[in-house]
Image (cartoon, rainbow, N blue to C red):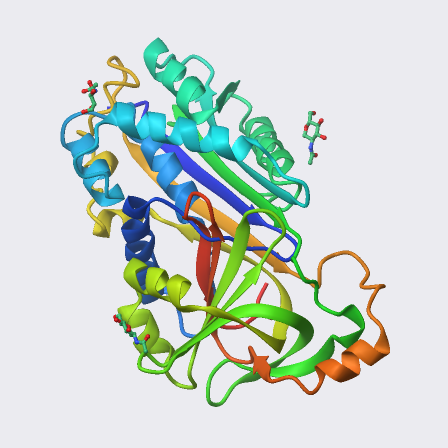
Length: 390
Ligand SMILES: *[C@@H]1O[C@H](CO)[C@@H](O)[C@H](O)[C@H]1NC(C)=O
Ligand SMILES: *[C@@H]1O[C@H](CO)[C@@H](O)[C@H](O)[C@H]1NC(C)=O
Ligand SMILES: *[C@@H]1O[C@H](CO)[C@@H](O)[C@H](O)[C@H]1NC(C)=O
């Protein structure tokens, strides 16, 4: 068989002081299942960062063209249970429409694209669904000139992620028929910015024996916080302007393994409901990371196997060409800064008052969730083990 495949590139992106809180419940189980699987594959001391929303979107888009077991495995792993494809499509359509109303101070772009090899013609119906429900953009590349095709795809991704993700695609399989791309770009501005001139070098303890130097930012404000002593962790919510928030989960010293072992959407909900506002100084590293992941093995382990096999059923995409998914790659980056803008309004007396406040210092590995409040969606999540790793 020939003419294999769908390559699914997920380009996800985050900028300046970012974060959010997010999404429908069925996506949440999938988000945590992904975390546990990726965590088991990630070396100690390395960061994990991905967009559960982006991955769900790309796979849902793929499922519009799938049939039989190929489809049912996608649905059950994504947690869609009793839903049918039209309901899922309409859900995304609604979601994208809602997010389309961009707000001042916050930029959240989620989009999809289908790249076709010139000469491969997928079914009209599939293309229509991609356009109608997933705001998908469709374009052709000529595989006879692979370097140009790669450059064209990378330029598209780079444009959509505001240059944050530049060389996502390295090469193209000559058998490629189609590539699916999903990107998530988020840029937020803190509701209360960090005080730029107070940023200092400080130690961050990657583990008991390793420490690295970070630029530690100082935030002074009223943040939502909750100390879950029974469960050995502290939760801090740092809101962005607009409708997103960053939830920092800071396990007690030596308790990261325990926390990542039990964490689930129920804990997230419990914490969201338990936080209360207090005034304190927050010390948070300034950092910028980029994490690439090949999700093929992870998705297979989570139950999506058929899509990768020679007898996969993508008859909804083409009933002439046999298709299977050859590769699913994902890339996400996060950059957290004071805000990007100068903290010119801060005066010295304020700072002195501030120093009498209690402190919360993020100087050891933590979990991070960027969530969209209205849709309760997890836009991004991950573990920052070492903020100095790019
Ligand atoms: C999907 O489910 C909805 C609600 O049960 C139903 O109205 C609709 O006809 C179903 N669509 C298909 C294609 O089965
Ligand atoms: C992306 O491309 C469009 C159209 O060429 C252009 O208007 C826009 O400024 C580009 N965006 C970025 C971030 O480069
Ligand atoms: C610890 O987590 C459980 C959920 O697993 C929750 O029911 C319990 O209330 C938490 N403990 C505290 C002190 O919040």
